[in-house]
Image: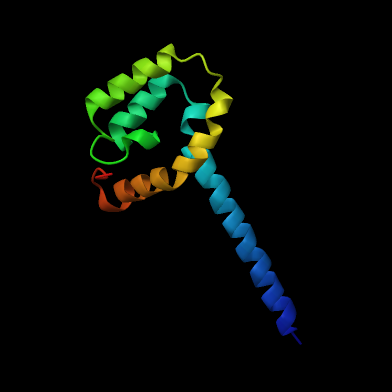
Length: 110
């Protein structure tokens, strides 16, 4: 006989694991500035939108904004790992843009 409590506890553990996998994947996908070069970030900006909080909205995919951010990134001497907090904050926006592009097959308006 199957114990209902063990089934429920297994379901809860599996759900927690799926949540952990989703959050980890989101952080790896959106870990843009801390893991990629400025040139990769420029390509990302042109195709998917800027990874900066200051460029959410109509300026997110503006080529002039992307070019300005590339110049700022090339001049910046800050170690890349210090951008991890910014990547974590932008993770929901990046995931929403990615979902918009995949599901809608259009560029995200934000």
